[in-house]
Image (cartoon, rainbow, N blue to C red; front, top):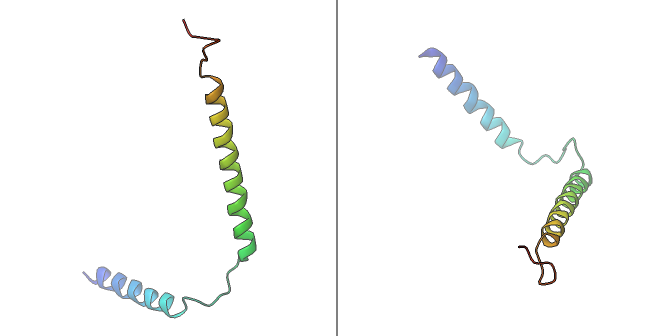
Length: 68
């Protein structure tokens, strides 16, 4: 039971320390880099979705090219 008490005290102490130093503003990664990464990923996902949609639309049969 002593190991559980020890872990509880350690976890509680660490959570109190994290709450105290919550908004220091010294992130190791600048905000601009994070935003650029998000925009880059969003552009890739949008391009892939557009490619899939165009590919799906070209496979729809028309009245001039019906499927037997």
